[in-house]
Amino acid sequence: MRVAVLGGHGKTGRAVCDALAAAGDTGALPLGRADWPELVAAVAGCDAAYVIAPNLHPDEPAYVAEVLAALAAAGVGRVVYHSVASPYVPAMPHHLGKARSEDLVRRSGLDWTILQPGAYLQNLDLTGPVEVPYSVDVPFGFLDLADLGRAAAVVLTSPGHSGATYELASRVATVRELAEEAGVAVRQVADPGAHPWLSAMFAYYDVHGLPVGTRVLHSLVP
View 1 (cartoon, rainbow, N blue to C red):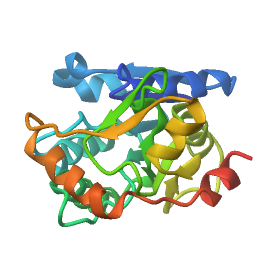
View 2: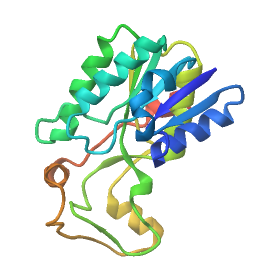
View 3: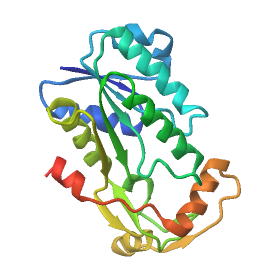
């Protein structure tokens, strides 16, 4: 089996490629922006695709629509879309872009699965004092990148996942709890230079966090 991983050179794509390689008989084809002009040719011969849009893409639905058209043209019948936990949140514009993209995937005519990951544990540097631009006391469903990769490999290479949407988290915690476990200081700081979409996300996190259950991941990857 051969899987094209669009966005395969970033940390998410590398985690998926590594897990596919560990699966044994599955080859991963990491594709980046340089491959975009020749996307149909690049994915030709692949059995499936894992689609990761560039971070904070200004028009993710348009990006995903073009990818889906290329996959269909190349005869790639299986797609797994990398979305986000709680995609339909009007207060977070980039989440809404993923919600609209999910709709495109579901109506694509392809054999699809959608993964909705929580916040990455690796986004927090716990080797020293932790500073984040949102409350350190709200709950998050944190996802380890290795767990994401393993879950992606499972849904790409085993039957029974067509038409499924899975929220993924490795554990539920606050940033303060993670910092205390690591024995480091933690505090909330302002980030006035943040992208407007990130500022909106931080404001949402301040009140609600981003809770995600862990049962789905643990059922996919015991």
